[in-house]
Length: 76
Image 1 (cartoon, one colour):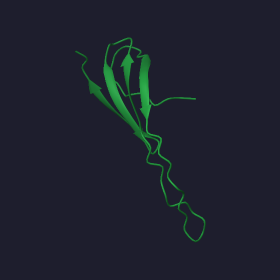
Image 2 (cartoon, rainbow, N blue to C red):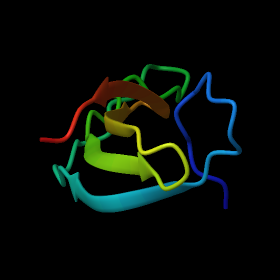
Image 3 (cartoon, rainbow, N blue to C red):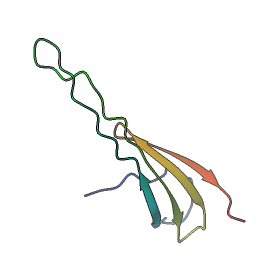
Image 4 (cartoon, rainbow, N blue to C red):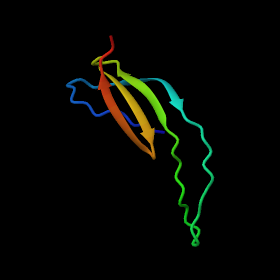
């Protein structure tokens, strides 16, 4: 299973370490149209952080609807 990783402009071969993830676990009742197509969407999210052990950069991320958005940040 592959994992989404941040895009980098590093000259090094980045290797990512992921920290704890936090997931929302809400049940969404399925809603269908008259043709049996599902209308409701799963709006649960996953948030977390990851670090590159080669270049030292850090990212926070959120995943929803099978799309992950990374935001780079600096650790204190």
